[in-house]
Length: 275
Picture 1 (cartoon, rainbow, N blue to C red):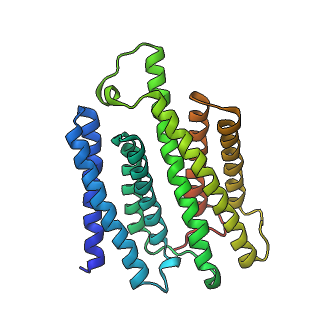
Picture 2 (cartoon, rainbow, N blue to C red):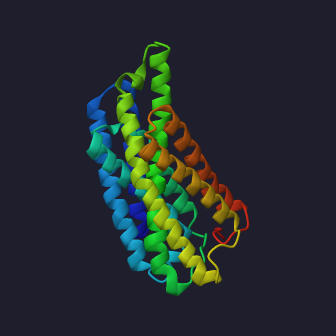
């Protein structure tokens, strides 16, 4: 077993432990378990960072065409964004969204080592640095906003119906906290998504001689951008709060996931993953 493989097994164990601590800690209202979850997530994130650096160092010539790298990087982005939110609101509740997704993506990355992504060598740096990097962080922010949206709708319904909160519901952050997370995620995530999309079209110009080719992935990505732009406008200019942005960001995130999994794997596209 190589050092690379040892790191991967330890990362899985730490992410799994963190997810378990977060869930049970929220369910049982046990702050100590939440702290253990954070410690596990920090340790897993640190090793995950080293794992990505090892991948870039040891497999420099092939890592950018390896499906493993992209799924692993996306999972890493979820944990990074969670830490940013935890620093801002001091609540481990949002780990219930980030931790399972990060673990799932890391496991998928290990199963995707035979998948290849075709990149023009002269544009690989631009593609990964601007397009992939910014898109992944915006997706992670979108996921946090969607998780906050689901929690907002649940808690808001409980309050309106005057139903008793049980289990983890008792320790959920306030409606205002969920709405603020939605707000921060959108005002940061949309500009990042726009930058990533622009870099992608620039890359397409060099790779395929035209910026837009009616590729299924490009069409769905533009649909997501227009919905994201509308949501950004409504929050910043119109002042949307509460239920409406919560519902819309969930819709945007679901479409993004359909695009990521359905189109990349099942539909002929420039962005497909091939074994």
